[in-house]
Picture 1 (cartoon, helix red, strand yellow):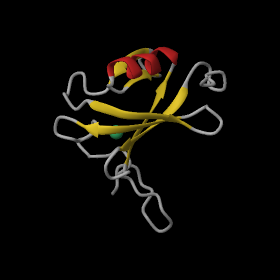
Picture 2 (cartoon, rainbow, N blue to C red):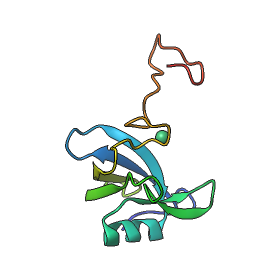
Picture 3 (tube, rainbow, N blue to C red):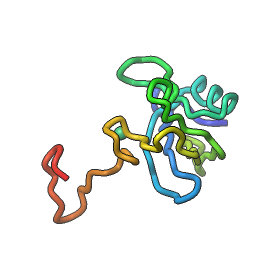
Picture 4 (tube, rainbow, N blue to C red):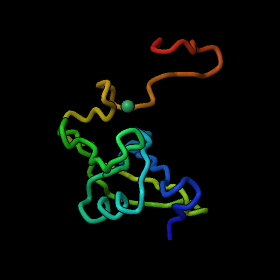
Length: 114
Ligand SMILES: [Zn+2]
């Protein structure tokens, strides 16, 4: 049983490319988003800003076909292994992954600079 109590009904969901292992994005899921994801096979999240469910790629066509749904040792985080559909770019900025900003030591931390 997933523990949704720690973040007021939500759990973080890490999305990983099933082939390369690349981390593509992190979303949040409530119980319904997880159920829909498992039923439909397409990654569906809960938007904290819009306060609603959203299926990744529903407008862009860049849907995420889920091949595995895992949870961690504490059962408070989800890991989705996915196939990238559409043009394969997961981030709304057009990048393949949301994690394209490097904040490593020595890298610039100026917003938008990369
Ligand atoms: Zn993004």
